[in-house]
Amino acid sequence: MVEKHPKAQIVQFSKLMYDKWLINSYEGKISIKHEEKVYITPSNIHKGMLTEDMIVVIENEENYNGSYKPSSEVKIHLGTYRV
Image 1: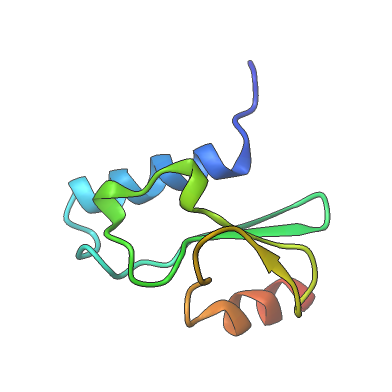
Image 2 (image 1 turned 30 degrees about the vertical axis):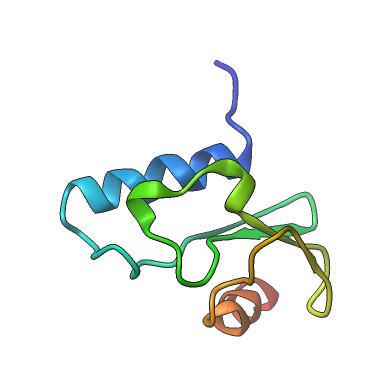
């Protein structure tokens, strides 16, 4: 079985949670830590419309790349991964 890229996994589960009414369109932040990077949903993006290019990649706690701002809950996610 081929493992999906973390961005693809986040998009898949965000849409699934939205479609199943587990979250509203702007709730339900998701992140994945993979190979020393953290992938996280962006701030203020509708979860049903999320695409892989919208996922924010954080290489350390100071720097992130992408066109979107990370979730406002990013510090909670990063702190959880540190622990």
